[in-house]
Length: 151
Image (cartoon, rainbow, N blue to C red; front, side):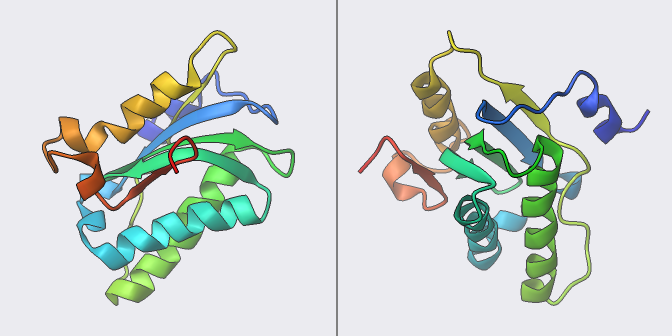
């Protein structure tokens, strides 16, 4: 069974639930060290919100992966919502880089938050990722993250 298939085992999609999704670049290539490529992904997260597919709580885009916390709206299921963001961003990144490469690893990791889980704690984990990876010493110095809990 391939990597993406393993991640789908036990997956269910339920509108209005909060999902914590992590997805990696193909072979963990640090594509998002390129500012333009990073902004393409972030713009596609915002487009997903604009189209009422998701309602983003927050995200952090690392050089080789994305952490995204959002509410899944009733427009589509989880796999299609993620596929939409990954597909559009991959096409745009290839155009931007003038390459024809696989941008994303197949599949994604998802966790549906239960009522007893603290959304702000999960968001703190997501936002602190660049600090744990020693990319910056202050989260204010990292440009590829956002969270509704901050002004």
